[in-house]
Amino acid sequence: MRLMAPDCGASLGLNVDIGKIVQRGHENSGSGRRLPVQLDLLPLGPSHSASGTPEPSSLITKNMFSWQQQQPFRNGSWTNSGSGASQSLGGASSPRGIDMNQLPLTTEFDDAVLSSPSSIGMMKREREKMHESFDLERERGACDLSSRGGGGSDDEDGGAGSRKKLRLSKEQSALLEESFKHHSTLNPKQKNALAKQLNLRPRQVEVWFQNRRARTKLKQTEVDCELLKRCCETLTIENRRLLKELQELRAIKAAPSRVIAHDFYSPLPAATLTMCPSCERVATVDNRSITFSKPGYSHLSQAPTAC
DNA sequence: TGAAGGCGTTCTATTACATCA
DNA sequence: AATGATGTAATAGAACGCCTT
Image (tube, rainbow, N blue to C red; front, top):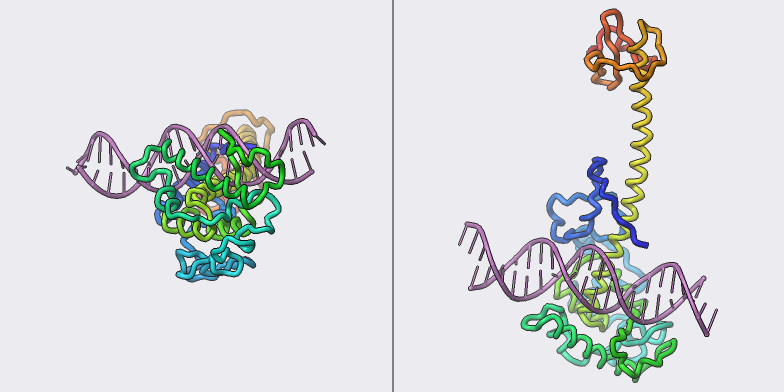
């Protein structure tokens, strides 16, 4: 399902700017950024781990990120100890998918050249080809190490034009999620560090964050839509009420004296309507009396400005 | 100082694959 | 077994900001 953001927030005077909820958020975090009612989906501020105490998950602990600490996460309890053996990320416990995630990166080529699709001196297409060929190399290696859960008939051919889909392990997802809680965007250093921890290519980490931001924004948009819908309903009700009140006032004006006639559509000169500045109720004033649109506003009986 | 171009990054829309019911 | 729905990794292209010339 694709949810289109309604462009009615501004017209309703709501503090909702759906189109820019996430966009450039990290860049504007310090200045005049309007925020809608927020789901707790997006890390809006700087890491609260610096001074606060984020709740660590069972697997993820404080100072787990390599850009926050010197000791790499791979030395933790569940990470690959470097051998690429069974206890590595997403190891044998992963019920589905190939283990290409945990293949050890055996070359610096990855970080140096493939960390960004926009590396210097390379046309985009050429870089993509390098990515693809490098992926194929890795996948061939993966096929040697593990078999795909379902039909793996096309594993060997390299799939001209077919694209393999990696499934992140639970642990990898958990770490990425935890990282996302701290930073919805990563600088290159963080990206590379995280990629190393996860045994993924930096590009994969980058893509994961892109998609994660998109998911967050989609969810936030859904929440905002709900909010706007409720606002719209409330305003409709209020509008009805005000219309009714206006009709009553017109009826009062149309009446010869205090008698209320139910001619709701008779015109009333605006100059004869006076609003009480304190309670914001409207009184009709003529040369004989002051009549109020609703009973119980006798405090206006002397003069409309008295209250 | 402003314009132009290159580069890096992000966003959005979309595709393609994997899994599940 | 086939199929549609769903989730998500990956891709393409546009836009933006920053830097250099």
